[in-house]
Image (tube, rainbow, N blue to C red; front, side, top):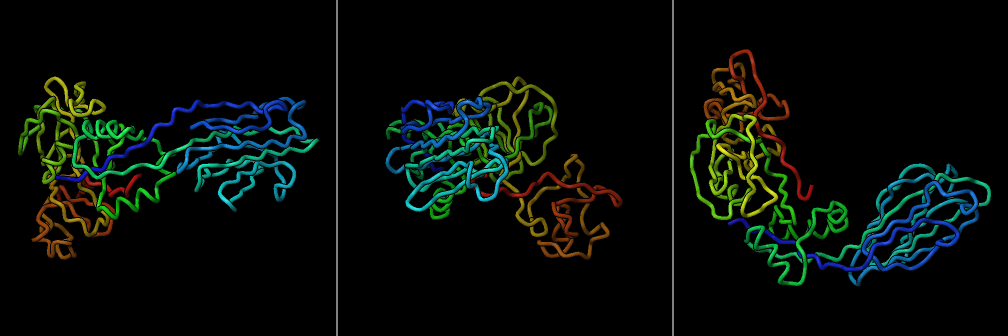
Length: 356
C-alpha cells in the first residue's frame, strides 16, 4: 500500500492586525499569525520624515514569511534616504527601495523587525506588505485515507495543513529532505492535491469500458488510483471505481461528491469522473509506457510500418515498441503515427517535481 504522510500543523489563535501607517502608528510589537502594513496613498502631512520600527514575534520554533502586495519608494542609489529594511536572525538584513516589488522574505527564526524611513521632501506612492507566521510541521508517515489523516491530526492537537503555497515555500527545503529520506512522493493536505494525476473530465458511462471494477465504501481519487495503478486511466462514480486503458471524453455532468473526500468528484447520473493515471515521462525518448492511441483517440500505427522503423527505441527495435506511443525523433513528448502520413502526440505529460 502506498505510504501517505500527513502534515500536522499546530494552530495559532492570535488575532490579525492591519496597520495603516501614519505618524500615530509608526511602530509597535505584534504577536499575530497574520498582519498587514499599508502606507499606500497616505497624505503628504504624515508621510515625511518618518522613522518607523515594527517588531513581529512568532511562536517559538516558527518562521515568518514577509511579502509585498504593492511597492514604490522612488528611484535612488543605495537606498540611503527612503527605504524599507527587514531584519531577522543575528546578521540577516535587507534594504528595499525603488519601484520593483521585492521577493518574499523567509526568516530562519520566529522574530523579524521592519524599519521604514522617509526623507522630508519626496511624496512617496507607498507600499503594502503582509506577514504570515508558520509553525514547523510535524510530518507523519501513515498509510491512511484523507479522512483518517484529518482525524489523526486532530487527535494530536493539530490541524491538517491548508494548501498554502507560502507555507510550502517557507518549509520547502525541510519538507523535501524529509520526503526524500522516507522515500515519499505524495502528501495529504486539507484539500488533497497530487500533481501526478490529470483530470480528463466527466465522461458518459456509454464510453467507459472497464478492465477492472471495484466497489469502494469511502471512494476517492487516491484509493481508486492505487487499485488501478497498472492501467492508463481510472474513473469514479459514487462507490464504483473502474480501471481503464482507453477513454473518450464527453461533456456530461458530474455532481456527486466522494464519500472519502468531499472535495473530490465521484461521477454523476450515468457518468464517471475520469482521471489519467499516475504515468508521465521524465525523458520522452526513454518513456516505454503502454499507451496505444493519440490524444485524439486514434489508434497508433505499429512502428515497424512507419518511416522510423529503423530508429532507436527504449524497448529495443521497432518490433519491440509495437504500436505504443514513443518519441524516437526527439520531438519532446511521446507521440505516434495514426496513418503513414499523419501523427499526433499522446496523452502523456511531463512528470512534475515534488511539491509543485
